[in-house]
Structure formats: C-alpha cells, structure tokens
Length: 132
Image (cartoon, rainbow, N blue to C red; front, side, top):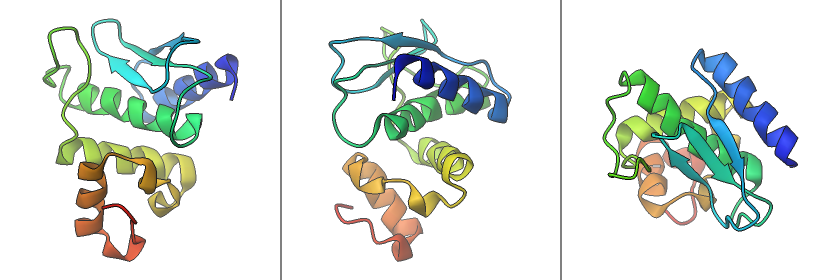
C-alpha cells in the first residue's frame, strides 16, 4: 500500500463512519502504527511490521472511532497517544473490520495484541484465534 492509498483508505473509513478523517503521517522510520489524538493523526510507513498495512490502518482508525463515539473524551496519555485496548475499543475494531471485510472473522486477528485476541476468543470462540 502506498502513502496515497493509505490516505484514501482513512478518508473512506471516515466517510463510512461519518467522522473526521485523521491526518496521515507517512514515516520512513515507523515500524508500527500509532494514533495521536492531539494531532488527530495516524503514523505509519513502508517499514511497518506485523500484518498488512491495511490491518494496521484499521486498528489505528478504530482508536479514532472510539474517540469520536465518546465525544472526544476517551482517555489518552499526556502526549495524546493511544487509548486502552478495552472492550469499547474491541467493539470499534470489530465494526471497522466488518466495514472492510464484510465478515469481521476475515480480519487477521492473529496479529493483534494478546489482550485483544483473548477478548475476541471469549466472545467468538468459533473464530479460533491462535494466540488468544
């Protein structure tokens, strides 16, 4: 996925969920995705590890979806980064995966944090997440 495709993807997701699109910061140094509320931005790049860039963007976009759903009151660290990966986040991630894949089971849950995998395994054991 190129930088232009990544930006287009974020705009498409924002349009589908009727929220403002986060700004894309394309970094040649980024090895994982990050969401920053203060900048209202997602940082990714061509060196991002684990999963596909599309799945990383879905994960990071889910942070903004929960942020908007909570009327911008979702807690974050002093530098504006990341919310906890709690049940509200998992719900938002499922919603994003559903929009992208039709069936959220088609999302690559095996590349998610173990806490998210465990939550998914409890709720949807038929998805058979390996690491959860």
